[in-house]
Figure 1 (spheres, helix red, strand yellow):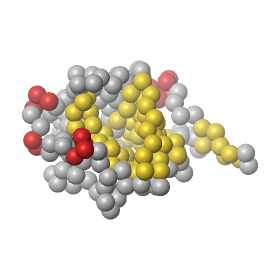
Figure 2 (cartoon, helix red, strand yellow; figure 1 turned 90 degrees about the vertical axis):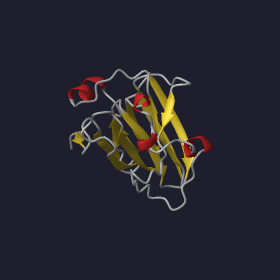
Figure 3 (cartoon, one colour; figure 1 turned 60 degrees about the horizontal axis):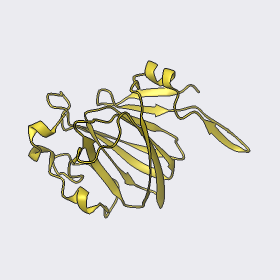
Figure 4 (cartoon, helix red, strand yellow; figure 1 turned 45 degrees about the horizontal axis):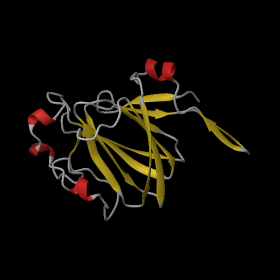
Length: 183
């Protein structure tokens, strides 16, 4: 089976299904190859890699940076997440729409999220380790967000009692964000 790059309903957001080679010893897969990914719409220069660990029920997000926007390539190394991208680009025909995909150590899928989207995920397994590549460095003071349970977005995070950080609970609804604070 060849690696698959699958367009989602949101232009630029791409679900990636890599080749996984399994045998009695385990498995091998290529998680990123610049030329192949660029040929298929994943073209930014990634400059930072992040790794997070979370427990069941945690919701992280919805986050974005404005002056230092980040495209992201997200991968669940161990466990399962529901990964979400929300289009927050002013003037976009899909503004306020979202797409969500299960990423796990079973399906080995990745999600590419270009600049101009808010990103978040919920943890569906007991614990999860998530890695993601970013096209710009994290810049304190340039972090913004949308309330993860914004009723206008109506995202089904697939967890019964979401656990969120105090900071994430204080983010505004998308329709309350000042226009100059959107990409």
